[in-house]
Length: 402
Ligand code: ADP
Image 1 (cartoon, rainbow, N blue to C red):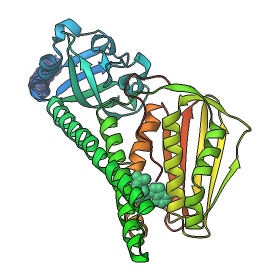
Image 2: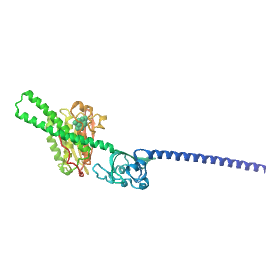
Image 3: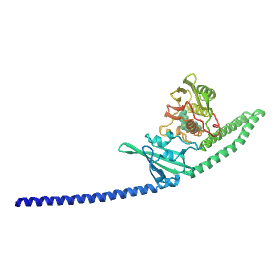
Image 4: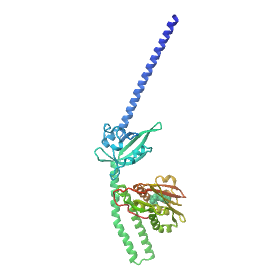
């Protein structure tokens, strides 16, 4: 009997202790919950106050969160857009006002796995256009993609500066062309009409060389300014790619003879008809072939290959030239970029040709890349669609063979 009472008391004491322990755990949980809520509120406040626009979407591309800057920049409030498809609510346009189709939107591509940076225009709620630079990344939780987050910046000011810079380059280039053509004509007239001494002829040749270089430079700058202001149109027509390459090879003969470089069209179908902008394709070919020849020392080879793929054509231009140092390859398509070894071999290059080539390839809906080893040679690859889409704008590029 006595033993029973003692046991019961012990059980009650244990229960009391367990109750206190449970209460303590509950209190701790409550504190932890409050801490998490506070931390989340802080994170939300930080995200809400970021000066750049921010939008989070789920894996279907439906909006789950936007911040204050988004609301201010794009004009939509979270309660108006939550749960709606971002791509549908905020259309995206290119420079010329063409809407980017749903499956070409970066976000759509991201949701299938990549991260990327782009510059585009968003169409605001009031239908006005907002130029933005955006960075989009997938959100991965425990190895699974649950959505994407995009941060975008209003680049109206940069665009305006770019526009006036391009306008300035374009105006000055046009203004410079007229007197330069006058100089070139006078040089020709002078050399035909005047009896010149050997020395006089050499002087005149130097003037002609410099005037021609200036003319090339002005045309390149005009192309750059047109591309940058988004004025270049694409005018596809039916072309035989094989014939264009043969034509380019004929035009490069003098350059090859001068550099003692052999140029061969080694592998190609009999004909390969594509629908593309002739000026642009010629520009791409001329520049890549001229570079390959000019950056290849005497007795070297340049080989051209052309292959039809499923919906594309693949062009390869391979040379045994100086190559491009590995760490300089990444930036070689940028404006005014020249590799260190090229500057030594040909001090007079501009670093503009490849930039214009890349932009032209992009305008035609294609891709360009290279493989190169310093001292061994380079191969430039260009993949173009068999059918390029038309784009409104100014007629083509100002053509120039180096
Ligand atoms: P440029 O030839 O006038 O310098 P480009 O824009 O055509 O300008 O080329 C940019 C740079 O790319 C060149 O200066 C050179 O460093 C590199 N490059 C282009 N093509 C080749 C090539 N086939 N072989 C080696 N380097 C090349």
